[in-house]
Length: 111
View 1 (tube, rainbow, N blue to C red):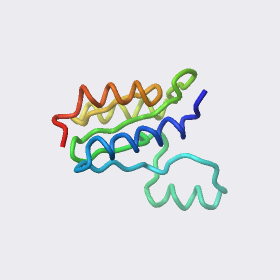
View 2: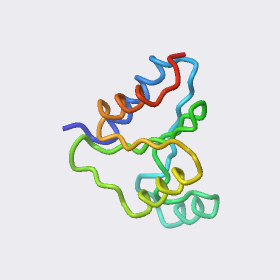
View 3: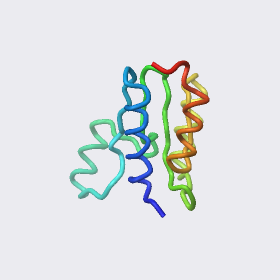
View 4: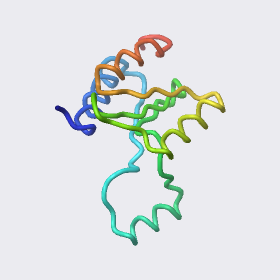
């Protein structure tokens, strides 16, 4: 079974190949950090639960999970609800294929 990292990497590669005029970038919110680094990043505005990826052209946030077994945390659910409430698009992708299919339904046009 692929890791969330592998699923996300495949999705980013697919978006960049399929929609070359559209930019997608990761929110580097995860990973192990020292307390000092964590405190510094929090002071700079890092917020737990922010979705993994953002596509500015579509105002679309993407939270990636493994194909099976990935569960949203309370802060992730809160962020997705907040973003939906202010009119942003959100996708919860359970693996590359699921996220790809949802993007194909969401994307305004192939650029």
